[in-house]
Length: 315
Picture 1: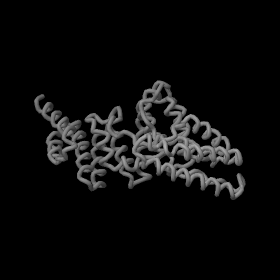
Picture 2 (picture 1 turned 60 degrees about the horizontal axis):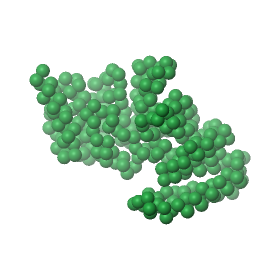
Picture 3 (picture 1 turned 180 degrees about the vertical axis):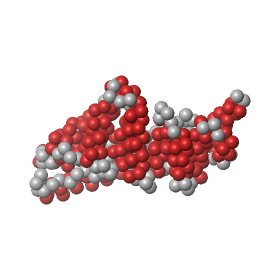
Picture 4 (picture 1 turned 135 degrees about the vertical axis):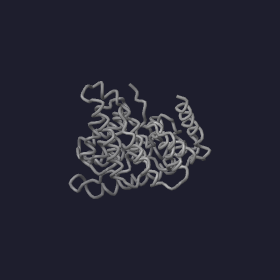
């Protein structure tokens, strides 16, 4: 079963709109919150450093040099405008892969080497995720206490349509690094997107699933209070509940509105607030909020909510 979602294995921002009844454009929301420029990344945490008893000091220096070359190549690839331009870097990418292979031959018991190489292979420009997963499994055998490895294996299994197995790895990542918000976020995303799979497994009720999902998003937000994307996704999570607490949703959208300054961001959140107010039957308040939305890019979404107000008034 091919999953219908994209996890951050691809280092892409998750769609923020498909769960919202009024369907605010994903590109609009991503642009509003600056997420196109700085998406969530599953590999922001640095690869683990080799310990002194695993390899000589020279191994750390050799691996550092490989990682620096990797960063330089990926930066260069990001500046290319077309596939043909990327072809110019093909030889350098291949040489780096060859050097990683030689490094692993030299230090076959160094988990950090497998992790760094796997993260490189998982990049979209390389797109060797299956090969990367094999390296991650080897790293996990060598050192079972690396949260980045658990997280990446969870991503791979989620992409393969195995969410229950993926959850076990995500939970292990959280256990090893409980203060890393991304790992909590991953759990929330997985429980949302693969809800039917978990319910069919028979070990979850909708109530426990909803609570675990929302708790995960809330924990991510709490651990990274300055991250607007985590806060936004937590606010969105109220739409995902079987029995939404609309009053709590409204409170959190209003809190988020107070944390942003750009007009487009504020007006995007106003649409959410109005949407929640309509669901609560507070039509006058909703109409007042919609009157504040004047950005051209938000007019389609605004008019959908205006139509809802008009339809409710005729009942």
